[in-house]
Image (cartoon, rainbow, N blue to C red; front, side, top):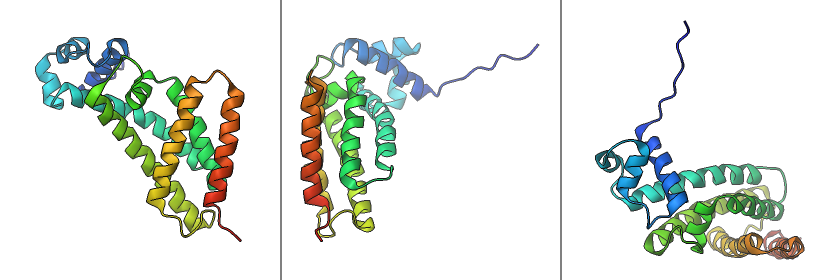
Length: 200
């Protein structure tokens, strides 16, 4: 008789799965460390063996969810094309992903009951830092390839692009009018193009 193959999750992953289920269902405030432990079928001590606090558990869940988005974002940014086109693709991928991930969306924009306060700010900062790093990579690569002006301050440009990009993402998430988003994306492309592309 053939043995049944079983997959054993790492204890930390099992805790994160349980925590994510609780946070998505009940929100940060209404979830306790004991809830997470019960959902994972273990005791509170196991949670504290891997994480210092409920806040640390939440941020680990956000970061894990963020990794899925970053994989899609990196794929969009590694495609062939000029930097303005890649940045537009990044906005579109972000809207698509965040429209289906309430945990990331609420952590970033703070507009639901899932999370609020300091932990929301920490989760937002985590996402902003990782995405700004992606943008720095696109701009640095563009400068090396000659598709981005050599005199662009990469750090400053990444910050500006991130903030304007988030405004577009928010519009894309709340607007019922696809034409409105398309118009804004076209304007974004034009402005970014005028600012980034080398002048000949």
